[in-house]
Length: 378
Image 1 (cartoon, helix red, strand yellow):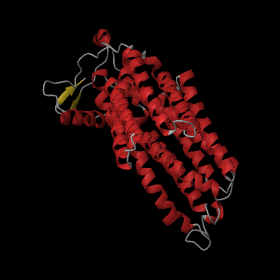
Image 2 (cartoon, helix red, strand yellow; image 1 turned 180 degrees about the vertical axis):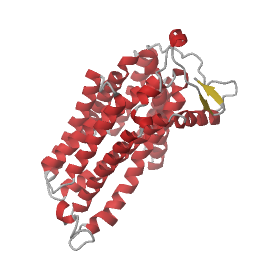
Image 3 (cartoon, rainbow, N blue to C red; image 1 turned 135 degrees about the vertical axis):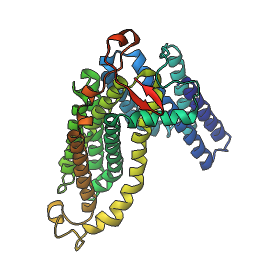
């Protein structure tokens, strides 16, 4: 984590110096931001694994909620602050130096925290290599169908989140003003903050897997409602409820993974889980716009393929194809959660897969063995 923070600081400082010298190009920005993203990719699994060693097991979900509150505040306040600072001296250069300072501050703060090193786990071997670690993280997840089911369910939620982020603006602007769009986005932000606050204050549902399923089903119903005949109220309420469900489901999944995966291998396992969840959003960015423009909008235009059938319920004309995409997204998310509930490996995961037990309690703990990547795992 320290290395990731310091590398990101160096890259940001380099961008600031290049900008001051008038030598910063778009290509340089692309490379720099890609490198910072790589740093984040290393940092997140290490952070998630460290939480397991620093926080009591019954507080995992609350810790996740607190982090999501911090992230939500940062994502809400940063654009506002950037908009103010970019108009002042020294503009973008000053913003980059503030960004550089934030990485240094984070590194100093992190250096003051002592993170205990986990004991060697069942996934450790003398022949460790990058490829073996990648294979181990994947094999660990697929050998536990309940865990991989949870990851795929949250990845689906992330996909729909990405699609909605792209489509909500054309949906609202098809019948309302930019001011109404701002109100809808505010409702979404409040929903995200409220969900994070619920996780931080309560730790979320006691039965985390079933709670995940219930809240994601609620999110699907919210998307379905937002695609009904045009109404700022329905879209605002749908945005609030959908974004409310996301941090609760994400926090529950994080707590389940931290409880069910032994600390010595969490970095490898979390990296694979995070990759699956994170990959869903850029895929949504790529496909949602073309699907809406080339298929949904023409189908629900006047005289379109579905204008005389489904169009009677959703409406016909500009923006109604995007609304239909919301309805389809909601139905798919509800179907995914129903399939997860009907799958006993997912539904009863918390009962079937034992929690990780500290070393001092292992003699009294029930033990289950799997064969993962040719190695016995307890």
